[in-house]
Length: 181
Image (cartoon, one colour):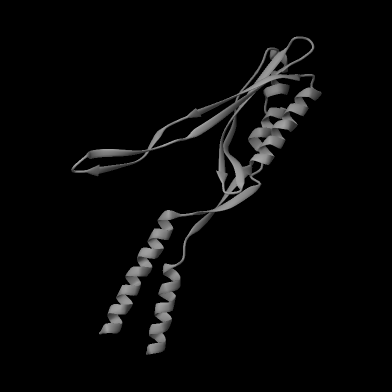
């Protein structure tokens, strides 16, 4: 009988100490930068030389959570959501211009710098006849939308971990209560 109780307590202990994690696939900043350089190189091969670039980072503040206290009323937990947009401009010898923009969220997880939600957010050309080759579905710019997710990291799933610990604690309490009988 004591052997069964020890095994049950050990199982509950292991279960209670288990944390639940998810593997998150992302694109490394190194791959992102390499892809941008490839796009620039491809545009140079089509006769467009870089003529400038700009970066704009916007902070979209949002409500992450709310709380209520009968003494102070409602409260809000605010969070920041930084979105960066890089714009690259090019010109050709005949005076034609083109530009494209890329929006993304740059993040850092310890030693891994990565980007999420990467998308071309605009592509323009002054020569309408060249739009398809510069901005269309088979253009160099579309490489950005097809970047591989070449990095990963483990992130804790708070809900699953909380449920595991709660369920394990309740089960341990029940087993201890049954042992007392």
